[in-house]
Length: 235
Image 1 (cartoon, helix red, strand yellow):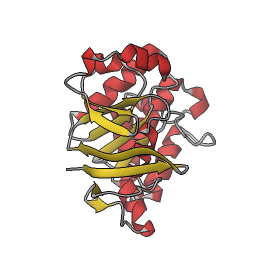
Image 2: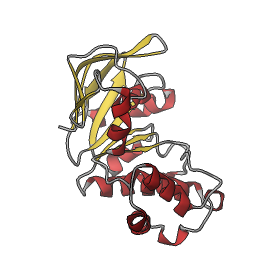
Image 3: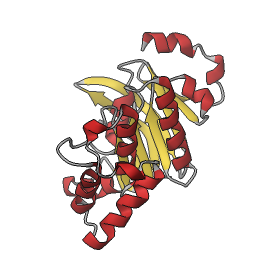
């Protein structure tokens, strides 16, 4: 089990956003987390890479670590085993795509002799092998998000955590990004993604959790019968 949360309680700014929840993710699973704004989606994701502390839990393990007891010096190693993708890309705008990726590899201990080939590999995976010398501002929003995905893949993660990865993209580009993440999950890397992009749930089926009223529930088998259109309008 890559993520094993049992009876976990999470606070954000002294407000309980999720209480007594169970949440599990295994190898290669493609997991959506949906819910209204403020329902705890992002807070849940932040606990996975220890940006936000868990208040209490019966069990809270991520990649074999107890995140309730993890030491601060151990967090960077945990994060190296996962890829994190943000809605706003968070690329370094003063350097090329290639140097953005090399910066991460260098920071995470890759040898110089191995870095160039790894960059080629991940750019090929996201279909942007010809963009290595481009600056971020020369790329479209969809291309920048693909570079962010390439960056997340650099350390061959066991999990990709994506917080609203299509939030700033048009529908067609968003569909292409979700398709790419779905393909990545088929290679064995789990993908855990928060989203308001409800149509994607039908187009690219996966496991669906919904955050609502401080709880989280697996609605994979029932979400088609729930009025998610109304939920999307309220989000």
